[in-house]
Image (cartoon, rainbow, N blue to C red; front, side):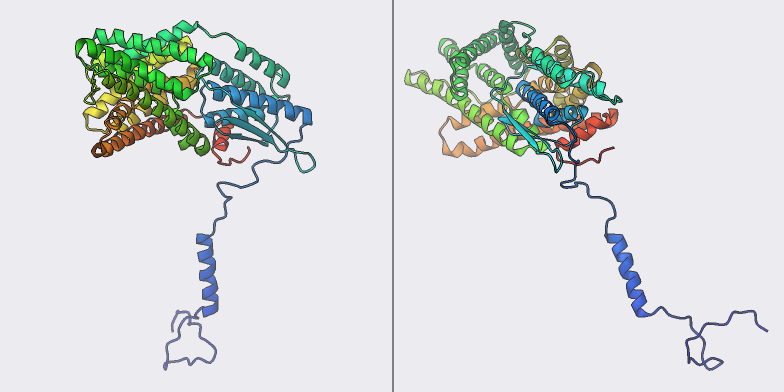
Length: 500
C-alpha cells in the first residue's frame, strides 16, 4: 500500500507499469504571453518623466492688473540683479520665487545678455502677458545686489505660511526697490581707485616682486581706473577703452626699461589681471555650465573682444617703442614666486581691492579676505603635489564656492560677491599674458605655443566656474535649501519639479 499521490496525466495517455506519468505542461501560447508580460514589466516605466513638457503649471486666476504689476516688479528685480553682478541662473530663480510669493505660479523667465523677458499664462480664457526689459548697463555693485536680495528674501519669507500673501503689496515693494536702487554708494569714487591700486599690488606680490614694483603697479592701476572712468563719461566704446587701458601699464614698463634697462614684466601682468577681473570670464563659463548658452556665448564674445583690446594696446606700445629705437622685450618667462606667506598676503589684498572696486559692504569685504587666503593656500598645495593649473584652481574654487554659500546662508552677504572676490587671484592672467606675448612675435613657428597658452587660460576659467558650481552644490546638499528655493533653482535650469 502506497501513500504517494498519483501523477496527473494528459487525456489519452497510457498509465500503468508500461509508462511513468509526467506533470501537465504549460501550453506554448500561454508561456509566450507570460514571458511577454514579464519583459514589458521589466522594461516599461510606470513613473512620470523627469522633464514633463508643457505641464509645469496651470494658468493663474489673477486679475490683469495684479499680473501686470507682478510682471513689472519681476522685470525690475531681474534687471537690477543682472546689472549688479548676479548670474543668469540665480536671477531666474529669484524672480520665480518672487512671482510665486505673489501668487503667480505660471511665470516664465527668459534671459539673454542684453534683455530679460517675463511671461505669465492666465488660462485659456485670458490673454497671456509677456513683457521685456532691455539691460543697458552692467557694472558689479555688490552693495545694491545685497540690498535687492535681502528685499526679495523678506518678501518671500513674509509670504510663507500666510494665506494673504506677502506683508508688502506689489506697489509698496516696487517703491522700496526704487529707493534701494537710487541710494548712494557706501563710499566715494576715489575709494574704487584705491581698490584697483591695492588689487594690482596684490598681483605683483604673487610673483615675488619687491616694494618698488608694488608702488609702480599701484600707480599704473590707479591711472588706468581714472582713465577708464573719464572715457566712460565721454562715451568711448569699451574696446578702445580696453586698448588704452592695456597701453598704460605697458607704457610705464617701457619707461622703466628705457631708464634702467630692466624688463618689469610684472607691471604688464598686473595690468592684465586687473583688466581681466572686470570682464565676464567667470560669468561666461558659469552661464555655460548652468545651460544659458545664448548668454554665455554673448559674454564669451565680449571677453574675446576685450582680450583682443588688451593685445592691441600692448602691441601698439611695443611697436611705437621699436619705432623710437627702444626694443623692449617683455619676457614671457615669469612664474609665481615669493614665499607662501607673501603670496597669501597678496591674494588677500587682491580680494580687498576687488571688493572696494565693486562697492562691497564691510561684512562682504571681511568674509572675502578670509576666504581668499585658504583658497590660495589650497592652490599652492595642489600645484605642489603635481596638479595642473586648471585642476588646482578647480579644487581651490570648490572651497570658495562652498564657503560663499555658507556665508550667504549665515550672514546674508551676496554669494556672487564673496565667490568672485575669493577667486580673482586665481584668474588666468599669466596664461593670457604669455599667449599675447607669443602672438606679438609675428612668428609662425610659435603659433602652436600661443594656442596652448590660450587653451590653458580657457581651461583655467572653466575650472574656476566648475569648482564654484561644485562647491556651491555640495554645500547646498549638505545644508539644504528650503523647498521653494530648490524648486525655483531647478526650474531656472529647465528641470520640472512637481508642485507640493
